[in-house]
Image (cartoon, rainbow, N blue to C red; front, side, top):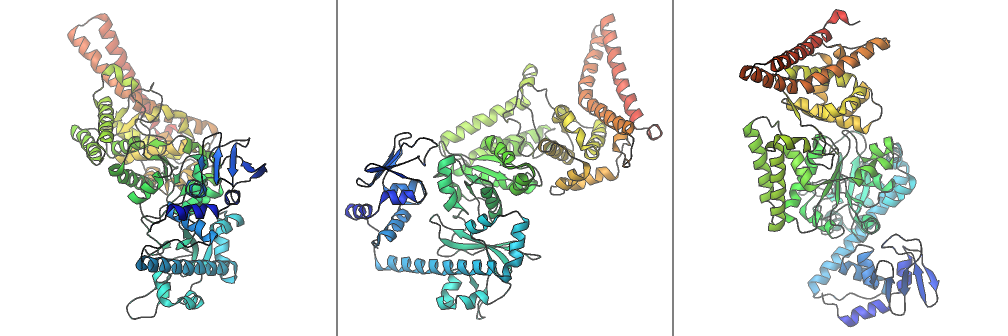
Length: 620
């Protein structure tokens, strides 16, 4: 398709720029021009001018400048040809077609757009009628407002195999099948694809309906059903809500990517309008490239559970081969068991905004996931970590970016495993999974090194984790000590990390509330097992009646604190005792002997106190 300069000039001359801009921005007449607050940057005093005679706009504040076509591409987020087509339609100009076949394809797409628009109108009508009662009730229970329902065009598909087919029969069966609205199997009669579902229209960047997503109401599979790929709809290239998120991102300078369209809708209703979602698949390379045209580092937001973190890692690995200078991905993780709607309902939009304000960078995400993949207690496991991150670096096509990542991962590996003893206090804290950061997140560097718990102490640690599940109010009181623990048992370590994460996100928490959150994670069965029975019968592991005296509860909490101290302090005590014993053997003096005896006594006191905590008769 060739557009001559003369044709484009005619298009610009037929477009009244102030009217076009005035549809989304409040403009005021100022002499022979118009003025407004600039839509490309935040300002209170208007510095944005529109000149209809010359056909351009200009901002004296940020320097934004362009014509009608530039406005459509920069502010509306359309591609060049889409912008031209929209302006041409309003100006009643025909866009030149290069050949008859292209014109035929264009006509076919236009016809399919008509079919999809008709289907959308029909679904909305059903939603607002008697058939849509259950769908309206579902959205009401989810807290979706009437304004949001209208804005996103919710509809309803009745549980019928032929109502849509009959209603749109005038468009012809072939187009209904091609648009993905009907299913055709062999020689059987076509039937409605969407039945008994809440309908969500999927739009292109120009706001035209090109497909649908349907959520089942009640029992049934699949929970969500999308249109198949059609001449209008390519699932791997389309992003939900892009038509609204694109102009919003020009105000915020960011794009949020969530897992599904209901997440996107909930965030938009809460004021986060710069949000998109893939459509039932992992984020693809094409979708990442599309987002990079708007922002350099989109923020991927996934649930903090195992499935959410796997989805985040898939997105990270998809991005590696196509990384380019100044373009990357950032990540935030929600608390386990919560989606954006849950978080906003329980703690308000400010809780989500706080996460967005401190995202995790791509390199941190990859390192964290691989570091947490298995306990790093053997040389083979440590070498496995090194190999995994090296394999990821080899996936990066850009040589300069690959070299920077290679050096970054090498420095992290060196710092963790080969730093000098005097330097280890400078290591970053290794938090658990979720949005609380990885080994090299932006945390203070004044932490002590991690404490590896294995052998006999692992049994004590198991009792401690069970005690934390039973007394979750104590987690935050011992966060510093718990954050240093690294257990040889990976399941126990994962549960401890989840407990820390939940405690950070909740000011008050009881055992039942904690279990409800853990039920959405892979840690739930481990937690329940610790509550049912434990190898060590510590005071803080026992089930207490509701009318338990405060003194009894205080003792359980005190004993739990002492057990945590044992697990975190004993490795250092053992090392000091070994060194003192060596000193006695090498050079027996009064001082070296006294130090050895002092440490022996401290070790015995630890052991005696643990025995006291396991005495059933001593605890009532």
